[in-house]
Image (tube, rainbow, N blue to C red; front, side):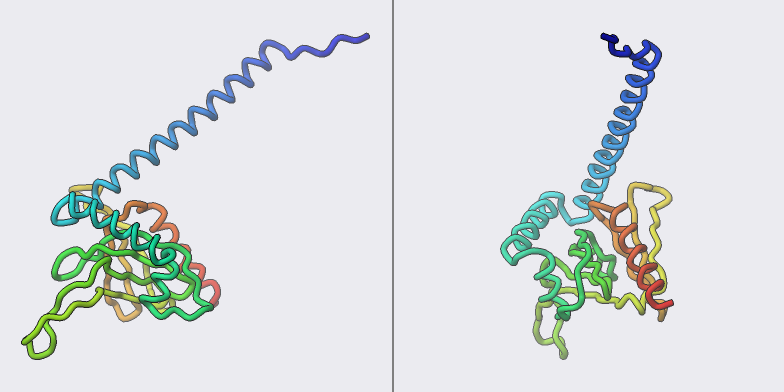
Length: 199
């Protein structure tokens, strides 16, 4: 009866070396992602008037999402989305405004990029005699979007932004993303995918 062929010592060493090398790359990638998430979360919390307020706001937003049945239902309700418009992604972030950063959620659908503040904001009603409250909303149809560009503060590289520019040259600056790289990739993918469909 023939004896089984034993792998050579060299082949075993190469197999172990390759396995350790793959494992090392995976650990390195996981470490990089954890560091990015930690840095992005810190930037997100720092943008609020207080870190405690931002943390409580994120918990409140998470509770609202659960209570109302998910981001898709909140998106449809806030923007009266038709049944054929599908929500692809949503990202907690801030929108830069003249009054300062506004915390909310950036929604990416098959038809638009939209933002809605987490809470209603106050404003003076016409005539200035009373204060009213409303959610701060922005909706840009994909066909009206000219560019989506990532950028960072040159003096503080951890401060990252996504600049959206409409075809009529209006600029919108989003920042404080917890998942910045994913947001950039999906916004740019949606824009290029929409353009490809139109071509």
